[in-house]
Amino acid sequence: MSHQHSATSTAADATSSTTHSSADPTVPISRALIDTLDNASDTSPAQTGIVTGHGPASPTGAFDAGDLPLSVWATAQTSPASQRKGRYVSASTAHPAKMLPAVATHAIHAYTRPGDLVFDPMAGSGTTLVEAIDAGRRAVGVEYEPHWVSVARANLDLARERGHDHDGEIVHGDARQLPSLLPAKYRGQVALVITSPPYGPSTHGQVVTASTDSDDGKVHKYHHRYGSALDRGNLANVGHHRLLAGFTRILTGCAAVLRPGGHIAITARPWREHSELIDLPSQIIACGQAAGLAPVERCVALLARVADRELVARGSFFQRDFIRKQREQGLPLHLIAHEDVIVMAKPLTPSGTSASSGDWDASRERWAS
Image (cartoon, rainbow, N blue to C red; front, side, top):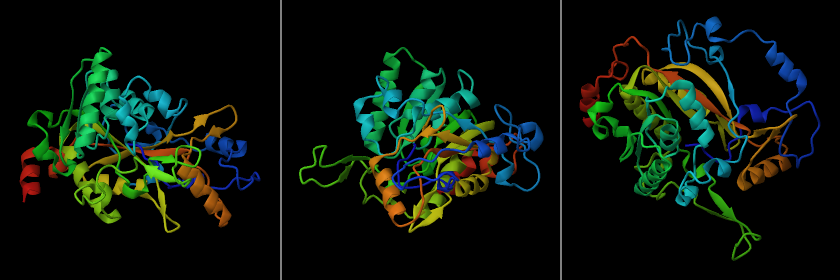
């Protein structure tokens, strides 16, 4: 799931040496900054001692996020609507936090081979599953909301109509209970997990205005909830700390189904809460480490189109409105141009924890208690 909300990324918060009007929604990247980054010290896997791609994670010594290899994924050269046209049922549009199909596709081609198994523990409308079977992989997903389970199944059926008959299924249930949800046949078989945490009330969904069918001339949100806002069993409706605790539990279950050396790609971005920046990507890394996973990469998936001389942002109505109001208050924020992709891996050598060793039965007993 990719998320549309009022967060502004750390990179997007940086101001440019070029002067811009307060109405300018984007900021160009200066040539001097690009040259500096190009000439920076080598951060390749060979230099950092971290194995990426299809190999296992084997970082040594104390972990420092600054040591992770970096890459930029050009995943928004076409609009989200264009990426989905003809490939997803119309009901998919209503999901408030759809992952960009190109992000899932890039991860699938980077970290798996044809025939591999791809898993999404919070599958939503099924973007990860569709992109996986379109790429010749097998796919399985878990989704909490019954409505989105139905939509995901419809999207899988549509993919099969296009001739992609690889295995793909969606399971209804709470991803915090993975050992009791997924058949034992999946234990240690998953090559890649693709997912992201829910953002709850910060999602934007869609909007009507005075010029787009608003009856009273005011701005109204719609399709901005995952399900009932009163359902406290949904991680989208709980506080920040409970969200992190629940996500750690989900990653622990994911580690049990991952094969040794398998990867987890998690899309996330910071957001502002009462003007303070919440560094969710770094917190997600900590959740993964608590689940027995090793960080191997921290990448940038672009949500803006790369033009000849600039990035063309694709901000939502609410993002643009938020930026305008913040600039009026003197805070020079800019539209979101990317989201982080945290890539973690299951070590080849068991660390002795139930998550790293894939001890499915121990996980069942511990979570059942």
